[in-house]
Image 1 (cartoon, rainbow, N blue to C red):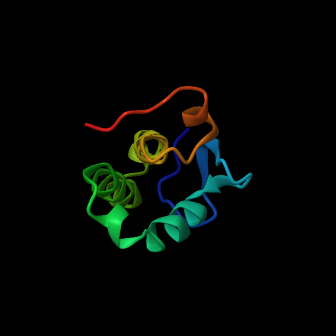
Image 2: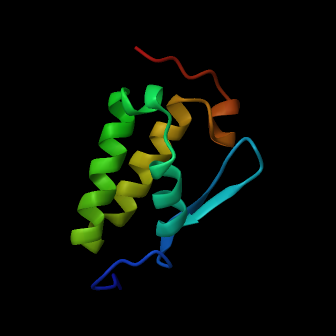
Amino acid sequence: MIDDHVTRETPLGFEIELVDGSTIGTVGDVEHYLRNLSADQHLKSHWGIAVRMFRNAMIEPAYLRAATMSFQTALALDGLTLLATAATVKQF
């Protein structure tokens, strides 16, 4: 069942392991990460999409899993997830 609201403590649909050994597992973890994006990352469209998806998930909790996948994709495109180290990710 999907909660009717999202808080910082709301767990993501799945945890995301980063190459630095840390894990992102809650909406609060994502919020902290997004607030600390570099200026270069802010210019990349995949980060803009991830930010918008999480903004939408805060309004409509049913979007949380899709927002998490968008966030994971942005991380992978920048080579920041363990998933990304298994294969080379090329940006177009």
